[in-house]
Amino acid sequence: MVSVGINVKTKSWEVEISHPWESLQVILSEPEKTLPFFPYFEDIQGDRVRFKVPRFIFNFGYEFKLTVGFQEHRAVYTFTGDRGILTITFEVVGGRLRVSASWAGFGEALMGNRWITLQGG
Image 1 (cartoon, helix red, strand yellow):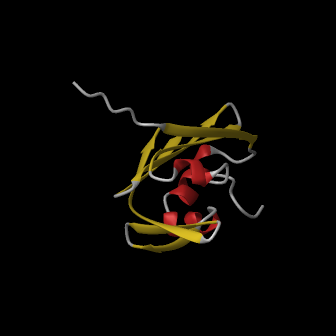
Image 2: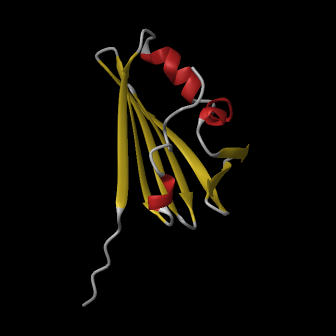
């Protein structure tokens, strides 16, 4: 019997927020407005999202199918593609926003720490 392990890389960040969950939920329900603030974002067409990860002399392109789900005080973006699965969870607890990203797939070491270091303010 051969056992194959999947290496999952997970990062989490937490910040204070002064807005209620309902406001954040409205923003997160429109990924076409949210995703342009993600590092490596290239394009979104319907439920198809493309990221381009420049490393050294290579540009790794990733295309995913995006599904967005909501639970109480939590939103989950799941990006599924040929090269892996990226899951980003946004959760509000006690006035703090916790964002976690988990990547299982090709080029995980190349991603570095930028997957969810959102750009801008």
